[in-house]
Length: 372
Image 1 (cartoon, rainbow, N blue to C red):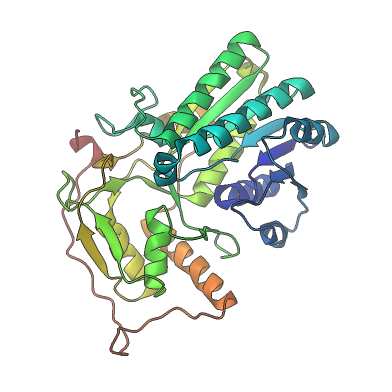
Image 2 (image 1 turned 135 degrees about the horizontal axis):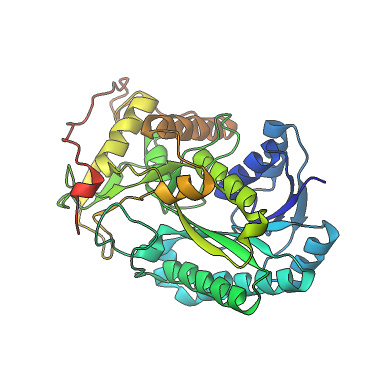
């Protein structure tokens, strides 16, 4: 019988792509989402992409009774836990909100899974558990050192899973430590469309390209990176979603019983903020304005994954490069704007058509040459 996967937060940015890949891989999928920061219409778009139905339950993962009923009703075989708050800045401003939502959601889910006899979990963790990396690239054995409440909730949930497995060795889990998910589905039907001011670079660049913002603020231009701006490991959200499918396949193995694996999902290649802006300028066909401003407290100069364990353990590796990430992000944002009857602006303030002009190209430095 086809395996059934519950995706908590499955209508969100990452969740919708995970659900799409699961359906394409032949799994039955149930989405549990409260739509606090997602769009119910996403479910219709997932069906349009895949040609397959997905079951939807509108509910909150913090409601243990609802979660357990869903697990039993749909005869769920494994859970991918994606629900939760994810904005670093917001977590610093309101840590109790993050502790309340993210930790209580995990406790509710794990308790419901035990009650329903579901013992396989893939957890949406984060590279923020590494804090400011000491050396690059970052391996799973690197010291954890969180620098914000959001990252702390991810680390605490990983430790909750450890304790659960110690008490119940029939349980098994994989915590996927994401680096920087970006881009959108090639159909432009699903992608990241944040409400309010974006928390991440790519949607901010896209909104600036669309004329919704004056310029991109680049925080810091004096880091020890190829061009002085922060460097990150950006991963296409479809590659990330395929990593979840690979993790589910691994979780179905009897040999996984009693295991909790931490696995990086990244490309192993770092790009600076200015390199991202240049690539996005190529994707949209005109230069994107930016201004370098002072550093933000707590930002790392660079963070790049070592993805070798994901290849060894899951048989997975990222395939999309930066150009494709930017092209898909811009296609999605353009579709959203068209739907809102707000065509993207391609003109300068003087009304003349803008032309693409590349930024100065800094020499590339291999990630293992950067030490912090």
